[in-house]
Image (cartoon, rainbow, N blue to C red; front, side, top):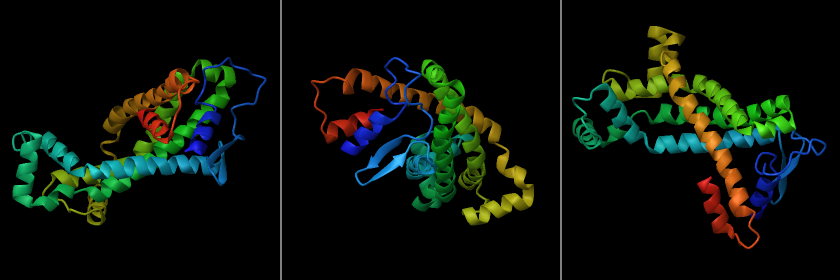
Length: 253
């Protein structure tokens, strides 16, 4: 946990509450930050971006897969609100007609799709954040950091949704169309044979309209929350942070 603390303190984006010093070390890749007790990860290196992408896989793929039953009922309410009038009734009708096993329909495209989306979202966010920071320069990047976070997250989500959209198309059809195959390996070839590649991207624009604003707010709020924690919590010398306290505040951010 101490190594994570040291790594967070050395991140060029984590503690911006100080006067910009253009003559000091730049924010461009090349800084070594401690990632574990026995190794180092160079900020901006391929390993650094790879770890960020892997974190996105874990945080998106696993969490969305765990709530597949709720997602299934939500989609069915949207498609057939007369039959599935509420969440509780949606669960009851689904189990009564198809059995409890039906509640996990669409888990495979959900896991694959959101894992890929998480990889692109978190990985590209760090890439675009560094890229835009280099384009602006250190002082401007600090002054306009919130806009930088918004631009980087929007750019990342744009590409993440392109990667995710095919799995979303398959998932929704599995969950809402009774005559559609119930597995990913059968559903994907069917869409391609009937509609071609465009069949996987019919919902891309609505997906962008939903996901890009959400991701912009998520990353910008996260970054500013981290800044607030460093300004009002971590910087107080009389506070003692044990491992549990640090974990709690990290999760809050």
